[in-house]
Length: 125
Image (cartoon, rainbow, N blue to C red):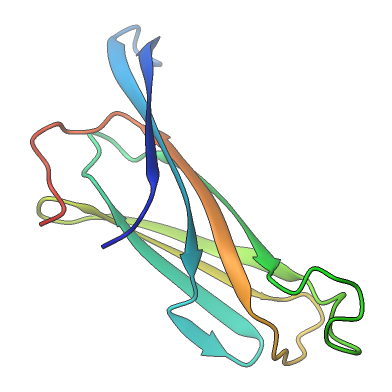
């Protein structure tokens, strides 16, 4: 089960002038797959009425300069964010790769924020 914080942002007006209830989810995900220079992160959230806005950043746990000689300055760039509604939940996948294309032994985590209107009948069971 995905651990996240859920924050009710209250009512907002959508692009069609309709009032919606907006909820924000934020959390940190560990990589589900580590392929040398690519990391993939997957998490589940409640089902949204329409596709939510998803933002993500990927950062190294080894933040101290010199923690891993020659590797502490390695950065990853997010190149894919997929949102896939399922029956009863939403599936989000984030993929990132090193900017120089080189392999890295560092541990990277994904911080994400997802904002949208949640279907209140959905569950993650």
